Image (tube, rainbow, N blue to C red; front, top):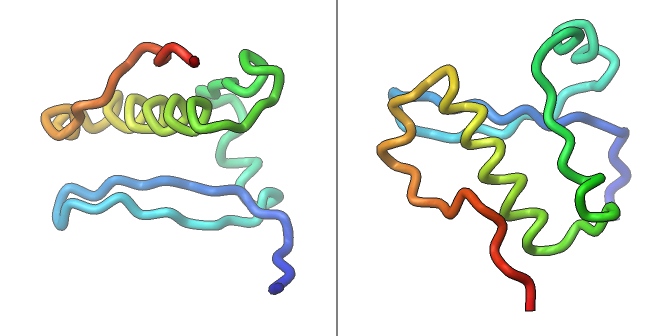
Amino acid sequence: MAIHPPYSVVLTYTEDPQQLIVHTVDPAKLAPLVAGKMGVVLADEHDFKLDDEFARQLGVAMLNAIALGQPDIRQYMTVTQEPIDRQ
């Protein structure tokens, strides 16, 4: 198995062409760029259970954050905003 150094993940939406691009970035280089910026904490709500519902909510939160600055993406979003009941 390949060994990777720790990295952060940056998600970018481009309108032309319409793409969601995932970048891996050195956390130390990213830290000054995100200092004082909006942040969302989701894991504490789930006792740090990284299950399917957490992953779904993380994806929705990421899309909503992108839509704050690029509202045209909302026309393509058909996601459930609220948590889905776990059975």
